[in-house]
Each structure stands twice: as C-alpha cells, then as structure tokens.
Image (cartoon, rainbow over all chains, first blue to last red; front, side, top):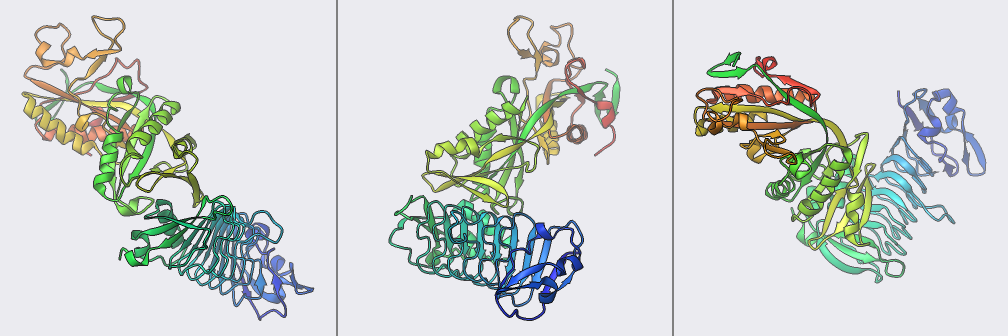
Length: 257
Length: 301
C-alpha cells in the first residue's frame, strides 16, 4: 500500500520537508516514518505529530502527501527517483535540485519551484515537476536538466540563470523570465513581453515541445488541443550570456482551434 | 512434385530457408500521412536485397495519431542488415538523406527498451553545426536539429533487435497475369506488424541463386531453375508442367514465428487467388538456420 501522509493541522512554523522523499522512505512502515523528525522553525518535530501516516513498508518508491502544505518547504527536494503526489498547495523550494523521479503537485506551489539553492551552481539536474495550479517566483532557477510544468501561471523571474532544461507555464510566465538563461527553454502558453535581451526568431510548431506537452498531459495537466496544433513564437536569448536559450510563446492570434 | 493440394494449388514438399538478421524499427511522423509515406518510401527505396543494397527495408504499417509519440500520423519502417553495425550505418544514412530532408517529418525509435542500440540523433545532430540542442523527455533523449523549415526532431538512438530474414514463398500459375494477381493478393495478406516485404510491391520476379554458372566472382545470378522460359533448355528445372510464370515473395520479420505466420497467410491467400503451384526457395538447408517447411503451413491462419 502506497505510503500516505495527511497533514493533521497547520504547523506552528515553516517545516523543511526535504527528507520526505521516496528513496529515503522506501521499506519503512508507517510507525517508522511517523518516528522520523523534521525541522519546524527552530524545533524538531516528529513526522507523526505533523501527519497522519498510513501505508508504507513496501519497496514501492512512491509517496502521497495531502493537506494544506503551504508551510512545508522543500517537498521533493533532492529527489532522484520514484514519485511524489501532493494533494494540496505547497511552500517554497518544492523539487529543488531534483535529479530524477516525478513530483506532481495537485495545487499551487510557492517560490523557487525546482530551483537551485543559494550559492549552488545548478538546480534541477533531472526529473519532472508538474503543478496543476500556479507557481511562485523564480521557478526553475538555475535548472540544468529536467522539466518543470505549471498548469497555471509561473511568477516573475522564471528560469533565472537556467543552464538548460525546460520550464513550461501554460497560464503564462511572469515578468523578467529567462534572465541569464544560457540554453534553457521557457514556454509560455500566454502572451508575454520577453526581456530586451531576447530577440524574435520565428513562429513555428516546435516538435520537441509537442512531445513535452503530450508528456505533461500524461502527467495530469490540462493541455488544450489548440496548444498542440497552433504556432509558437521563438525568442532567442539571453543575449547577455550565451544566446542559446529560448522563450517559446504561444501565438494566441493563430490559435489553431 | 510431391506435396499436397490446397484448393486448386499444388504445394511443393519443400521448405524456405532463412537467416538471422538484425533490425531496427523507425517511426516516421509528419504533418500528414502523405508526407510520412513519402519519407518512408524514400527511406525504403533501393533496399531490396542485402547483397546489392547493404540492407533490406520496407514499410511495416501505417500508424494512427494515437500510435505515434507526437500524436501525428506516422509510418513504421523495418530495416534489416546482417549485423548491428550494418543496421546502424544504414539507418543513419537513410534517416539523414530521406527522412530529415522530407518536409514536416520527425523520426523516433520503434524499439524502446532494446538491449542493443545504434546511434541515430547522436550522430545526425552534427548536421546542426553546433546549433543543435537536445531534450530529455520522459527519460528519453531527443535531438532538435534546426533546418530551413523549422526543426527536425530525432531520437538519440534506435534499438536493435534480432530478426529473421529470407523467408519466402514462390507462387506460380499458368500465365503471368494469374500468377501476379495471386502473388499480389498473397503479399497483401502477408504484410502486418513485424513483417517487411522488401521487394517492389513485396514481390520479386528475378529470384536469384547463389553464385553463377558462368562466373566465379558474381555473388548471385538468375534462378534459372525457376525461369519458365528455360524449362525446356535446362536439365535441372523446377518449373512444374503448365506453369507459365513464377513470383517470389521474400519475408524479413522480427521473429521466426512472424515469418511462419506471414508465410501461412500468403500460402493460403495465393491458393485462393488463382495460384496453381506454391513452392519455396532454399539452399539445401546448409546455409540458413531457420527452415520453414510448407508442409507445416497446411492449417489456415
């Protein structure tokens, strides 16, 4: 039975939830998981005090978290394999520096989704993060590889200093997206004014993006057919760094519907 | 000829002889099925015999939108060669010259998870002259090669499988029109998943024998034993009395059983479509490790 953690009540302080990843919890039964400790503000609290724990004790590398988890940061951070499904909103740093696996958030995510920690050269190096709602600022910052896909809007500064990888925001990306982007792909399902350091290239149907959109649809995002059949404007940048990155912006005037 | 009767057709007491081959399955998609077919026809051109063309290839089947990785119409192509290196080289050449060049196409590996692979996008990417980029999607790497139309998307590598090449049927009738109609019907019935018929329309009218009577250097020459016009001229003819034309259907497939089932479909269809004689080509059983006795194909598919 899949390991399930259901939040009892809102924590008294912010909780660093990074230890709750499938590869570390595999094989532990509910009692063992409940006995683990997490940092909550300046205190350490037992997982069992924060969550009602059920399932587990198997080799399955999967985890379901549910509740209003906005005060939990770092969910799925440093995950390298397995799957986490979150039923509810999450705090900052979800999926930070992930290297593999799938993190599905059925709700909204806070700032620095899938991002690099301060001082780190690279953020995500693999894996897939899917958020059905909105994401906060600087999603995918420092990403080297992998996919962050947001069904709603991504906040300002998405793809900050991306090295490579892909950030998709079907509801549109915020301002100053892709600052310092070297080879990464930023995808906005809504019109957006790119930074002046990006230059318009062409409108076309990007074949790799079609595969990625089908993939995120498979992972639970609602991707309307128009996005698959329409054209996207490619803007190249950031010209202040390498100019091998791109922002793909859906051409809403030529929707394909 | 001893053997058995299947409707009006006499089936020879013989067997087809086939060989192990390596193969790749390539999925070609395009904006329309017509463009996918164009690319597939180009890729499988001049690929009838490994002796003369270095590989054997054919369209396996059309793919609907739900059967392709990118949700567009597509075509599956099977390409066979004698070893993994040969498959890899031929796939790379043909995807580069016939698929990448074709408007709107993308090209994917049709054997995901295969133990052995050969480079495809990993080598073809250099055509991008440094402007190429890769994306890892659902754990699989693809290359984006910028081209005049937009981008050509291609899988990093293709899986290599172990298949069987050289299964065959030889279909004869009293005249060429009847024999060809029976062969065409058989070829149509034999196509399907896992099966490639590499000759034009799936049919070869110039079946060959190993070597030549008049040369020590020619690798192959006409199968004089099955040429009706030579029936009264040679001592070792295999053309039965009353047969005016014979056509061969060569089958390459992903497994021994796929060859056998294709032969079974072809045999019964040919017999129902006017063939008076059905036989098979072999090398005395000494060259190929797979033998397909026609006697084992009596039961209908």
